[in-house]
Length: 563
Image (cartoon, rainbow, N blue to C red):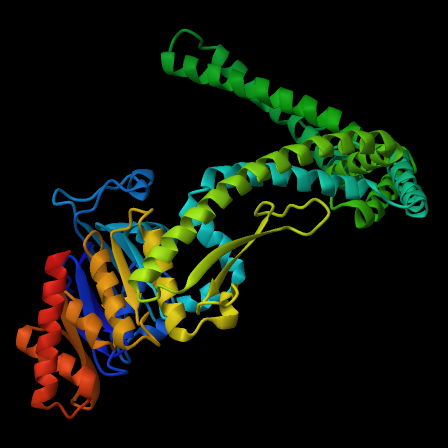
């Protein structure tokens, strides 16, 4: 459960520490006091999308941290190599910067926002006042049913088979072209293949040609340089070169060989130098004649490089890319020319894939229909407890209307129907449900779905909109029942719900030194009674309203003891 929520510089909340308790926690306050900001903070610390606009004006950043206690071994923790501390607690932190960056940590270890969101969804579920709009969207009904029925595995198996089927459809479509289009494409491919094959491309040739061209362009200078080096080393009839001078120095030392070890070592070094100089001289002589070339060779090189340049503009940025393009063209031409055989093979594969997808879709549909019957029964029971005993709820199944009878979700189109009054036909929820009915149906659905997950904390943000009187009392009793096995945090305007809470927080807005501040405080019995009276009577709270609030608290305590 969420035991501590720490908020810094979120909108009008400068700093707040909220110590939630187990069971039912309620937050009340005037409209605009900041109740929804507390929910926004919970949403932020569990990785949901947020905005830098939440940062309090003038603050360097906003910070939210949430301490969750009694944390079990969650899949996320195992996947990410983390665990709760020795007290079974997890500390989630998120700092929001003005530039939009976020710094997130779990028990001090940095994590990404996406990782924080993955963990947050295993710790806390937020049900907002707009969730009823999702209930009106028939596109969400199948998702609700799958969550209730736990059909993840058969749905995953079906989707894998369906992906195979659609992949084969794409391959078949790519091969199915009219004869005119096929002929045009064959002509294009044959021309491109012929042009590239005539060029007789070879990998690495462009670099080699470029190097040879540079040599030929500078052949005279290169030859002259090599000849100069050879002359300096070997000399001629009129002057001795470096090799001859080294030999002369070497002979001078040979005359005293064996007399001085130092001079012997020096002679050996001279011998090495002479040998290396002779090798260099020989190489320079050979190179000086190697820069000769046939007339027209440079023109041939330039022509070849120009051809490569023109081909690159059409087929790729390098010879290697052009060779890859040639291979693709040859493969495509083969596929077109042998498309008949390929199509026959692919259509046979598609028939098998369609048969498998339909079989898995049928199994998925059967599982869903069983889950649909169970969901109808559960929702009917929940609605009866929410003072809607006459309402009928139905899960309607229809086929997917296309050629295969399948889509990515299976073979079922699902929508929820209801009849609000005795004798009325079942109709789509969005056509007949009032705001109060939607709120209670959504609460029933959320309660049923929550039973199948391990999330320990449920947050309800003004989900009681449109509910009043006896219905409000039934909603309060239902939340008290849920709070027996889950932690419930509820933002509400209804005194019946607030009275049923085990812990009641007041959210109040005030001003100090020209700034707006919001404070969140836990209320004792006396202040709870005054707050409930305010919720009932507004600002003019009289003795009768206080007495009525006291009776409401007493009745709530009696009900909770009876659970």
